[in-house]
Length: 103
Image (cartoon, helix red, strand yellow):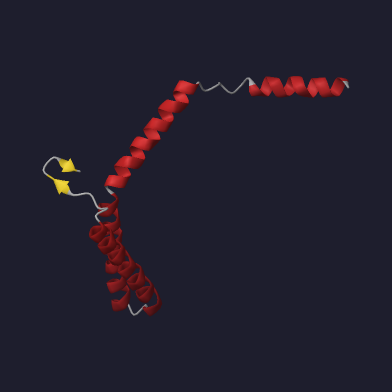
C-alpha cells in the first residue's frame, strides 16, 4: 500500500514540471490556427496551379529522359491537377484576384 502512494507522489511531481495552459491561451492558439488555414485556403488555387505546372514540367523532362514510367505517372498527376482546377473554376469555389489582393 505504501508503494502505491509513493508512485502517486512521483507521478504528481513529474506532472508539475509541465506548465498548465490556460483556456485563453488555448483559444488564442485555435484562432491563430484558423487564421493560417483561411490564408492558405485563399491561396489554394495558386498553390495547386504551381504543383500542376511542376508535374507537367517533370512529365516533359521524364519523356525526354526516356523514363516512361515516371513520365506517365507525372502526366496523370498533372492531368488530374488541371481537371481539379477546372472544376474549381467552373463551380465558383476559386477566389478572384482583384486590385486589393485575393477576395
